[in-house]
Amino acid sequence: MDPLLVAMEGMVEDLYGHVHRVSRVATAIGQEIGLDEEDLIHLTTVGVLHDVGKVHVDPGILAKPGPLLADELIHMRRHPELGFAMTVDRFDRVVSEAILYHHERFDGTGYPLGLRGNAIPLLARIVLIADAFDAITSHRSYQPALPVEYAVEEINRYAGTQFDPDLAQVFTHLVSSDRLGLRLGFRAAAAR
Image 1: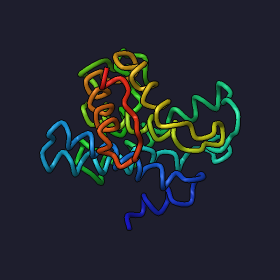
Image 2 (image 1 turned 180 degrees about the horizontal axis):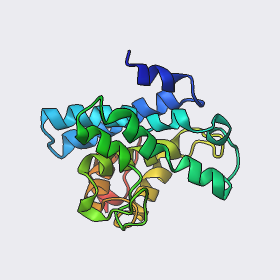
Image 3 (image 1 turned 135 degrees about the horizontal axis):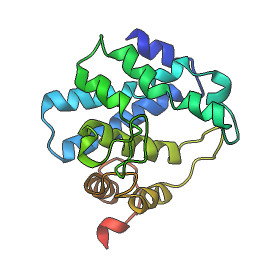
Image 4 (image 1 turned 120 degrees about the horizontal axis):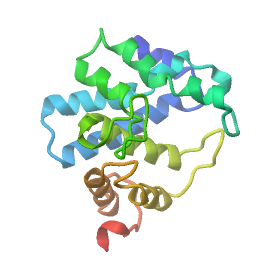
């Protein structure tokens, strides 16, 4: 097993499970949009390693049950840059750049650089959706797991601002057609 994965395994509750679920959903989106084999391999790697920079974040901040204070939020928001630094010499630059930009938002209000739209690498835009979906539907120290339907509605609500609207539509289609194995009777925005 890669030492970076081993480092993440013992971090915060379910970080290891989180990154693998993100990788699975991101890869499904990538397959749906027709990424080639090399890009799918890169995407799978980004999904698994997108939060690797969190190994350098104070565990008390990672597991804090309430809202983060301003200085804690600044510390937490360094994890993409830390992840980039940890991976840039070990993986293809496409992977490390997607890790760096996985919190950029489609409207330019994300971090660390405030990139906008297609200036954000495609793999980072895909991982952002998968990451948000898993964060919403998994138990966190600051929030209980919420229903899949709610998560999909949130992703659609913020399509065009936080999320790439075309990728949000692809994601919704995957969920509504049960191609992610969620076994739901969900028929939402994609069916409208």
